[in-house]
Image 1 (cartoon, each protein chain N blue to C red):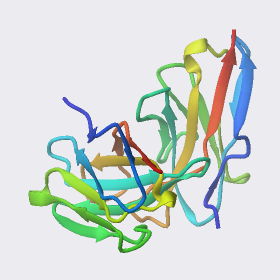
Image 2 (image 1 turned 135 degrees about the horizontal axis):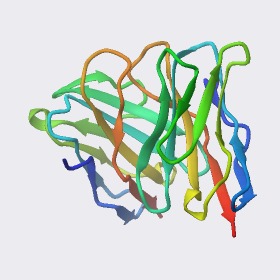
Image 3 (image 1 turned 45 degrees about the vertical axis):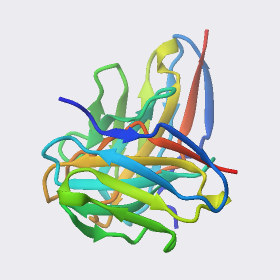
Amino acid sequence: AQSVTQLDSQVPVFEEAPVELRCNYSSSVSVYLFWYVQYPNQGLQLLLKYLSGSTLVKSINGFEAEFNKSQTSFHLRKPSVHISDTAEYFCAGFPGGYQKVTFGTGTKLQVIP
Amino acid sequence: EAGVTQFPSHSVIEKGQTVTLRCDPISGHDNLYWYRRVMGKEIKFLLHFVKESKQDESGMPNNRFLAERTGGTYSTLKVQPAELEDSGVYFCASSQGSSLPYEQYFGPGTRLTVT
């Protein structure tokens, strides 16, 4: 069974509009959750992570995600997107404490000028 | 500090041929991982090295795949003989530490196309 689920494969959004990329995790996944981003022709980069403490985590480029235990979600949001945010975004976690990352299927964010 | 590097960036081979992918982790990182993404699917774990030892190879699809990590430094992933379904992007990652949580640093990936 999929441990991390990304419901949207593609999300088109106009520049300067807000965006939310959805991620849900199953109980088999530990509470260490991540968002990775892959820009065109580049490798995976860690965008932000939730390990413990404050449930709202933020990246340096304006993204934020909130760990919601009751809804088993870790949605990624940005209030105003830029063209440069066009990329594929992966939600990920550690299942059962093993040292291997479990990824969602990815969401392609397309920012439209 | 150099990041995780992978070579080649692209490889196109015919079914039945052999291909070897290479990964150089970040210096000092004992943990090295291989992942694979086939088209349209999620990125899946293949295996995990701690130094030169295979810690977990539960994700290796079959015995056509052989991973090595000589001297606990760089790693190679050999596919022999390659099949059409092996096409995809192969990612390598490395990390420090031996206990969760920690961050895995990913390379740019090798895009393998088997024709």
